[in-house]
Image 1 (cartoon, rainbow, N blue to C red):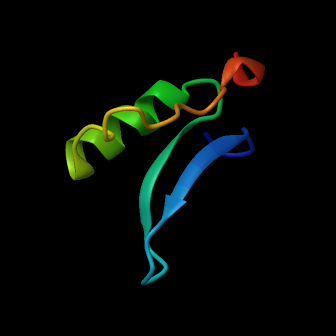
Image 2 (cartoon, rainbow, N blue to C red):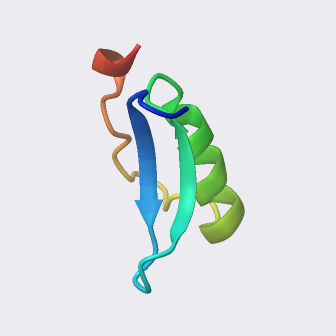
Length: 52
C-alpha cells in the first residue's frame, strides 16, 4: 500500500488502529463494528458512493 491512498484510523495515543484501501470503506466499517458493535437504530450511514 505504499504510496497508494488509504483509509487510516489513528488511536488517541497516535498508533494506527486500522489501515485499508480507500476504495474499500466497508473494511473500515467491519473493523468498527467488530470493535464497537453495530450503530444505533436510525443512525445515518455515511454516503461513500464517491469512493467506489
